[in-house]
Length: 145
Image (cartoon, rainbow, N blue to C red; front, side):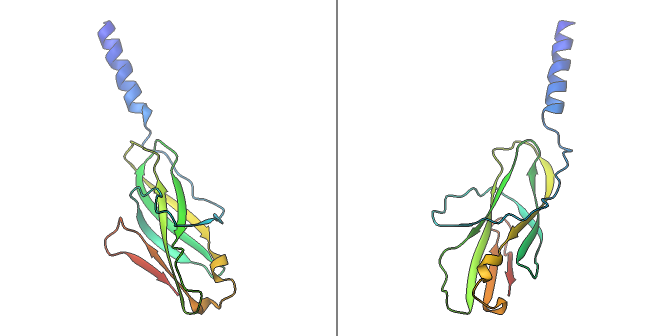
């Protein structure tokens, strides 16, 4: 009987240790920090970009998906620091995703927002083109002009 109790406790512990039904609420405020991707040592855990759009006031909104559910995930928008400041300007960006070794396999959808309005300071909006790249999706690039 003691063996059955031990098996039951192990089963309950494994069943509820990772909740794959966790609800992730979207961010309500845009992150204002854009990191210059100088060293190239940023987290690059897999994710998919489902939808992305740029608002007129310079907010880059993304809906992304990835596996997880047991750990806090971190996201940073990285800007390629090498661009010419003479119009037309092309700025390359990518999203850094740190899953913090999350072992769970729930499929998480997350809304992210980044305020990139400072990129346009000193330029007309039509002089700046932004390319968003995701190496985890084949031939996927979003270009905002």
